[in-house]
Length: 119
Image (cartoon, rainbow, N blue to C red; front, side, top):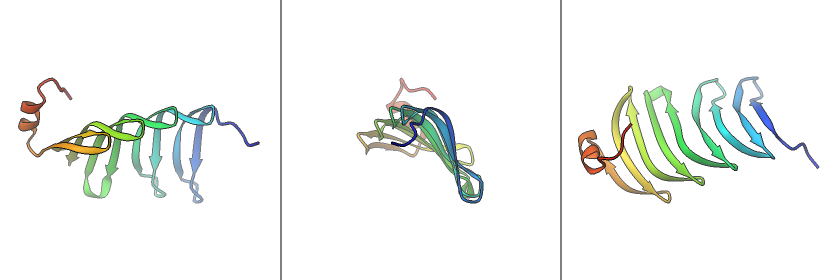
């Protein structure tokens, strides 16, 4: 029987760069995690609950100056997605059970259609 992962762990690529880091509870990812490329650049970060992606996740495309934030529930996109280019919000989307059900290219249209959402 192997080691039961508990507490804070860091995983590394063969070149010594950090691949990922975060907490485990009874062999399951729990809490906030970070994932990096082999070059050491952050690729994504977000919340795990009972080994499943939940709450907000951030994805980085550093080469294109893009960033996306997605809401997850039990490893599926469920909620809002916000897409940024050069730190400017360029698009908002809504997902239900991993299916896009709404998309707005204008932040004003998004706010009009979703008046209770703040970010």
